[in-house]
Image (tube, rainbow, N blue to C red):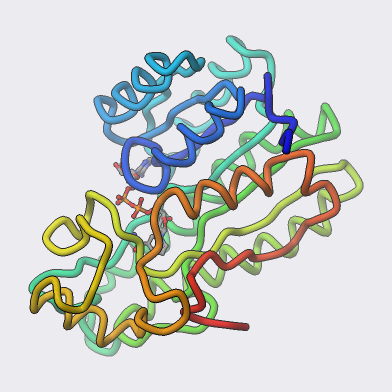
Length: 270
Ligand SMILES: NC(=O)c1ccc[n+]([C@@H]2O[C@H](COP(=O)([O-])OP(=O)(O)OC[C@H]3O[C@@H](n4cnc5c(N)ncnc54)[C@H](O)[C@@H]3O)[C@@H](O)[C@H]2O)c1
């Protein structure tokens, strides 16, 4: 199936590793040119180099997406070089730490407000910043695709992930409103929602794997808290997310907007 992505210009945030890296590589494989954003410049450069080595076209555009001035500067540079941005993937997000088998930050009541700020800044304001900066060009050209990576925590709520859940839920509400605001300009705005993802980071101790509860005690604890043994019975792979993003960014999803597509193996069902 031709996704119609050849020659499109895509900006993927937080694409230096994990889910974002898979999204960048997948869109590149479909023929899109990729602006690889990450806070960590070396990571962005590495992924851009991987894409180039596979015959794709990519450039690293490191910046902190919580800094609106820096985001505007990044978007200006991409548009100067490539003329436009057709696809924005808001992937950069901060995850709760999962140390010693314990999921999440401390219970909300009594937790440190600096912690709340971090989750809201990246998972919500980072999205606002990128949409505002990229949206101007999309409106002027009357077309574009915006896909934001959220979490099932934002759909069904996760105990001990209260602020993360709230920030992701905010991104989902924002997406719906924006879909109504931008629809007449042929800009589609959607979310892809993930459950626990198995990739190299940040859960390196126990997620280098096709998870089974037997792998180790830590993983067992995680899986008992996340009932991932239900449904399709494995953790999400970055490629699962990337395939969904490629579809929503593609010509095949022209009539889909304001939606949240859950890629979770059946973990939570709306
Ligand atoms: N991993 C999971 O289990 C999981 C589950 C549900 C949803 N998600 C969501 O998927 C997305 C990607 O998750 P991941 O597991 O690949 O994360 P990750 O932590 O492995 O990678 C995130 C990348 O974003 C970059 N980044 C961090 N702050 C940034 C900033 N201010 N500006 C630009 N880049 C920044 C990091 O350097 C890193 O390379 C996030 O939005 C996350 O909330 C992840």
